[in-house]
Length: 195
Image (cartoon, rainbow, N blue to C red; front, side, top):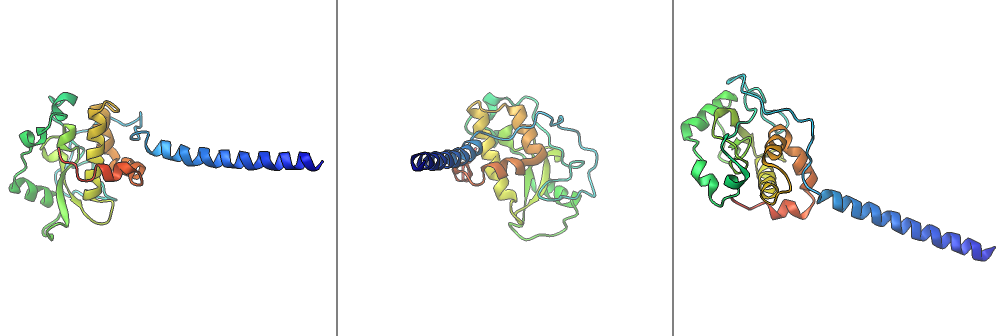
């Protein structure tokens, strides 16, 4: 009887260790398994308003900034080193117009960044439909979105995700990808990468 009790106790102990290991490594594997891609994301829409725009919860007003892409951008072009330097074209006048469309009449240096909703490194364009004043605070803000941009760019270039899927993911809710990678090595790895 005592032998059976010890066997049961040992079996239970090993079972608990196995479950703990599966949970721990399952969480780690899930965190590193790539971006969250919802198969139900709609196509990127068109801009329907240009004033009275309101950013909310770290996302732009989708009627003002639904995102826009260069139609000719492909995986091969965006993965070419130096690509963004060849297409970046947002003037100070453009930036001021974007601030005005969101009702921002003044701001401190570093408080906002006129950001490409779909970044250049993912084939995003310089159209007003793809630009918005993204706040640095509260976090996650513009600096954390940069991490997501770099992460998705790397995943497009290594073939883990398609360019259109990365464009949709970042256009609709970049925070979902950030929340998935924020506590992984990917958050640090892609923090200071420039394309």
